[in-house]
Amino acid sequence: MIIEKDKVVQFHYSLTTVDGDFRESSDKGEPVAFLVGRNNILPALEAAMLGKAAGDNITARLPAKDAYGEAVAGAVQRVPIKHLATKGKLTPGQVVKINTAEGLRDGTLVKVGRFNVDVDTNHPLAGKALDFDISIESVRDATAEEIAHGHAHGAGGHHH
Image 1 (cartoon, rainbow, N blue to C red):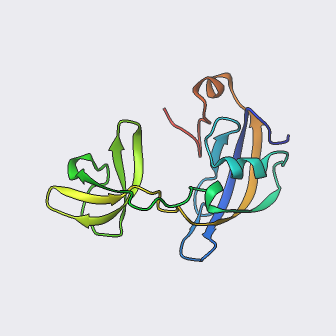
Image 2: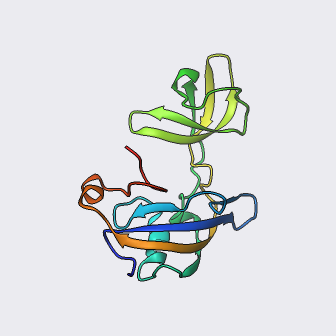
């Protein structure tokens, strides 16, 4: 079965910034699952997977504009600590989750005060070109419920 709209894909990935500053991998956990055509992963990464099948391996280099966008200068905001979903000791440089009206958003702490934090609201990987090594584990038809909800369910996907 090939990867196309309304298929559920499970894959393992290794992600490295082109400058080598950051590395992440799913190899020690469950594969990631997503519903194709529903904006569940980076569009350029999804495009690299279209037409592929289980067992295929893909290497994709995404320029910053096709990954998490270019970093925006001056994107620092003061946020009350109570709006952070991240709990525990806070330190500058730490990536945190912020509760917003649009849901959780990632940010990087610039300064930590007693009641407020200054957060760089750029995605932590904004401005970085990314290298992905992808191993397609499985491809299947999405269920009617997954299509209605707009995301994959089960292992590696969304849990209700």
